[in-house]
Image 1: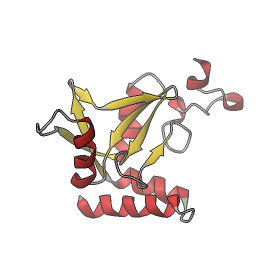
Image 2: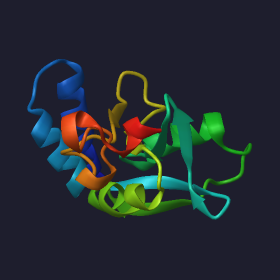
Image 3: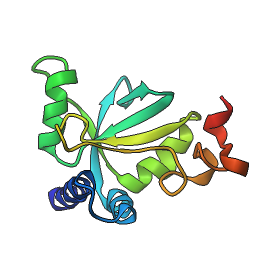
Length: 140
């Protein structure tokens, strides 16, 4: 699991430097097992810019950085280990609102957002799908 997370973190670093193939980054995200905090009986998420972001982490160190900022003191943070593909193919569509995946949000200069657009999430829930880019998210 750590090796796959490391590969995704490396692809993220490439893209943040302006190199690497965006399609390879999405493919790596889909193949990576991400650690997703669990709170209140569901996956931890945040809303920003009209999008609900599921927060996933490439390894326990990245999750720990997040837990220090958003956890409840010295309590351990529960999490689920989910394949990136499962998050964007199953979890995101089940939310019935524009949603994407935010990876390593507590890692300075190491985060990456996978927005709810075609090629990342299912076309039926992508905000840019449909005639002339009029997807579900744009109608709200």
